[in-house]
Image (tube, rainbow, N blue to C red):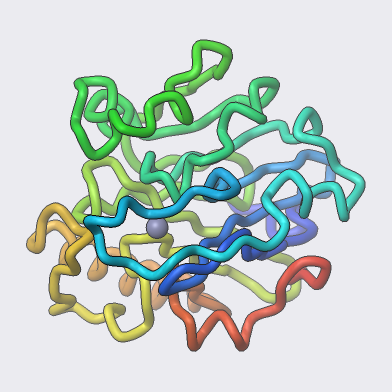
Length: 238
Ligand SMILES: [Zn+2]
């Protein structure tokens, strides 16, 4: 596989909401001026249904407002990587109708089949104005950005490897490994995962990627303690 470490310029991390854990999105900027967004966070004001017994979610600036801090409008996003269609990851997809949305085919088909986990939010990810490209398996999206299929949280979930010129490879595990304590070959199932064996396989796959790539940073999907230590927009990793 050819890599072009100089092809990417910056990785921004943004917190868009906070419930039990941070809800986050990521922006990658390439050297040739492309903007690649990873997930779109919760729709502002969304609260978990009372029967879930979760604490209320507090909102900071949403993804569109945080992009505006960088003088970017939603129309400036070229590609939106959809890791999966849980509401905390796809809540603002309709704002990105000009972008190409990239999703794993098996995840898109699972959601389109009417699976109740995703059907409740279908207006967020199944808007007819959105343009999807469906991928079949691990893929090099662009030089320096690789998509890694990690089933277990849900079928066709994807994690992202970003190769930065200074920081080196950064692995965004997303919900395949939501917190550092689950970055283990015997990772147990969380209530949010749909398959324990596949979740474990996904964690093992990411551990192997981090070792092979000598990842300079592994960012977990919803890790309170780690999040405190990370640079957030307007700061960035280069
Ligand atoms: Zn999540």
